[in-house]
Image (cartoon, rainbow, N blue to C red):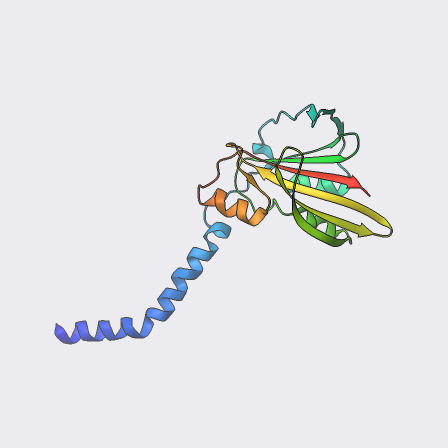
Length: 182
């Protein structure tokens, strides 16, 4: 009996790095392959969008072709509004998802050069992640934030995702993106 315990202990001593690597890989991939958090478009809840923003009336705008394609796969709801001096894009999300990504990624993907990224406070002291984007002579200023059901705000989508996955932030969440022409 002692000899078999020694052999099994020896095998464990030789194999533990592989077992540890396997466990770490499983833990790291759990958000990607474990519980499925991306809701199918048919499961989307009806969203009541605001009628005004910062005192300005919001006028609904149709999604462009690229936005429609992205919204068709997005696990939530997407809407665009004319807010007078800027464009407002609202995305409502009911579950944590990696499909909610920073606006800077979208602008880079469209060929914009991203400049002067920084955190800023608005007149109501809310914190926003802002940047300027330039392409073919067109310049825009983009600011974004994500707000949870308890009014906790995030300026970084990765921080939001992990807080939501770990139960530190409660949904539904609303991602707000403001775009101003410069």
